[in-house]
Length: 171
Image (cartoon, rainbow, N blue to C red; front, top):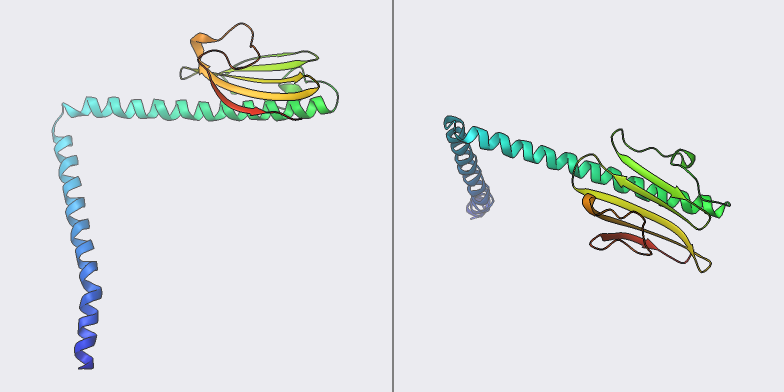
């Protein structure tokens, strides 16, 4: 009786593993058949190359976005710190920051506010960071928007059609 229970337990454990193995084999065989069929059809190669290029471009654009957002965050924190010690910094170099090789940046500072525009080389986005004194309080905010709709001067909030990334008050 004990031997029979042991065989039944082994069967119960082995059955799901066998099912998973069969599913894995049929899935990988099906995937191989699809990729082999695609390789045999030369008309799919240009579309696969176009898709590959599109995905590579998207990955580069996202990496530039991450770098720009990191620069915006570092600028904001750096300017808040500099203001605490007396005045806003007048350049990224004064903050110990640098933009990417092809990134276009424009920074303006005065006694009341400092702004940074960041325009990555790829993609359709630009970034704006502002740190300013309002009614005795330090306020920092940043936005992301279309390169084609960059205003000459930032207002009190994000430009129309832009998305606010961050806003910090009470400093």
